[in-house]
Image (cartoon, rainbow, N blue to C red; front, side, top):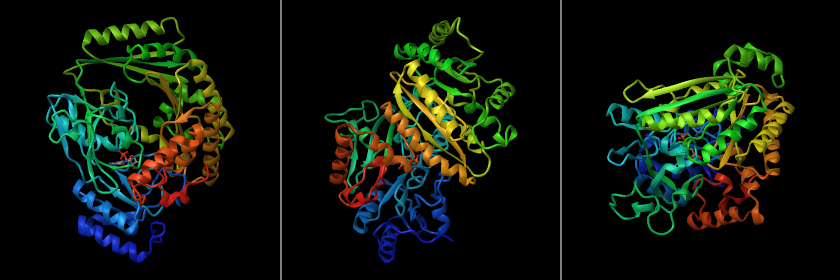
Length: 521
Ligand code: ADP
């Protein structure tokens, strides 16, 4: 039995009154405040079972209902934490940043409107990657998704947290075209061309007239997105590419420098990611099959695991999408760049329209396979992501890897890292895998994470996305001119949301009403 959790500064009787008012809008069955309900909105991957606890949830069915709910929330000062499907595992999942917040669960809102003429879709927040995939498949609509490694979540929530996928449409947030948003005061806004009622170009032209606000609602707490326009990839005539394995940690440097110019000049249009052996191994096996001692795995064990599964220290996959002649030519150009280089092994992939599609994220098919890595240590598994953004440069990538690897060893954790090459930047995605039933390990995770952030900050590399536990820590590293950006964000926050009811603390943005809740970085 858990103790009833209340929003900060709200009495039990005011909370009950607010819940009755919410129920008047959505119906009793969609106000979810039993112990069991609260349990369902936990972050199961979190290293802590006592942080970020919801007071309950309310699940509206429409934007109109949300408009009414935010007004009640403002009246009773109930902080709302919007989620689409709440599957943002590694970043907080369904749990709110501020304990006592009421989760605004939008997973009932599942409308999908595909524009087959223009290859776009307008989705409501509850539409999952599997929902959209099945919707397209069942209707034989020749459009492909870009899906993240964990495709359990929603199309909308993932793009709002700048999630990434594997195709040329993999930078999900950049494919947003037009939003509908409920503002904290209950107003309803459409961005871009949607600002003109009935405009046929809402999903076609991003900017509209005047300032373009789509990104204002991404990783922010300025509004609740109730519809999202997105561009989808027309089914290509062919998909081609190859996977390469490399033997040594030092290979990272030349691999980055080989791929970087091809990424910049547009030969490579998706973001290839150079990942270490554990990225593959952690979904194929578990640690206890190989080693039962604490501390990072010794090299001899790493060698044995790599040998067993034929995997390199690093691997990379590149893929091309489009007309057959074009993908064949691109593949040739990229293959040439690797000629004469110490490549351990190569596996080719070719697909032509009409053939059965590979069931993988490369082909835009939703997957949850990578979630298996939470089982690496056994026990109740979890992980947290640490992902600084850095320049695309082999020498810098190698030193970032060496610095991070030394930290993993120091804290006795198994290194799970990758370098995803954007057009100009690289995101160094590290996963810290842990066993929630190992208190010693959990104690180390906190210190370890702080050490990683400090090291990256010294290089002036900032994280692109972070777990709710670390939002203040990361926001604090964005420090130009005494945190001018945070001050601007909070000015906007206070203007739009004077009672601070929407996701207080999200991305380190604290409204005045809750400013005491900011954690010391
Ligand atoms: P998913 O289930 O797709 O993985 P989540 O629902 O967990 O995504 O949400 C990911 C992040 O985006 C969370 O920080 C959440 O607060 C925010 N978010 C999700 N949906 C919305 C929305 N409709 N409006 C505003 N913010 C949202």
